[in-house]
Length: 124
Image (tube, rainbow, N blue to C red; front, side, top):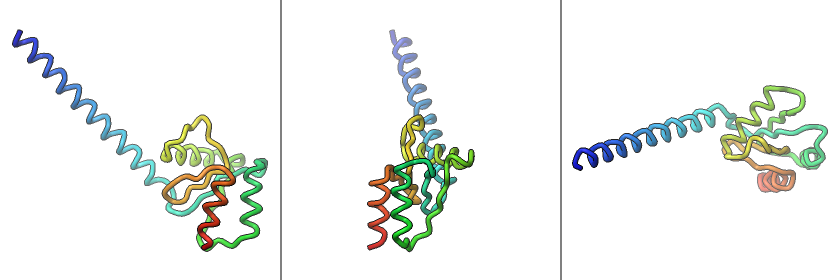
């Protein structure tokens, strides 16, 4: 009986250790992915996207004080991969990523209304 408890407790401790190591590795992966993302604002868009056109119209009428990099996701495979990586860091479902998506340098803002409202606050 004592041997059974000893084996059971040993197994539980081993399982807890494995879960801890896996958790730390996953957290490190998230941190390293975040480190690869730019520190400046990036707008993921497409010229064929109607919601993206609303953001473009707003940008053409307003001057931003912060630099904004615009990446067309239909013209460049690297831009698509960066969009996927950004969505992963933000906790989004990578199979249903939508554009426009704004990476603020620390968080994601999606949809034309959300992006425009965020950019309006920058102007204040």
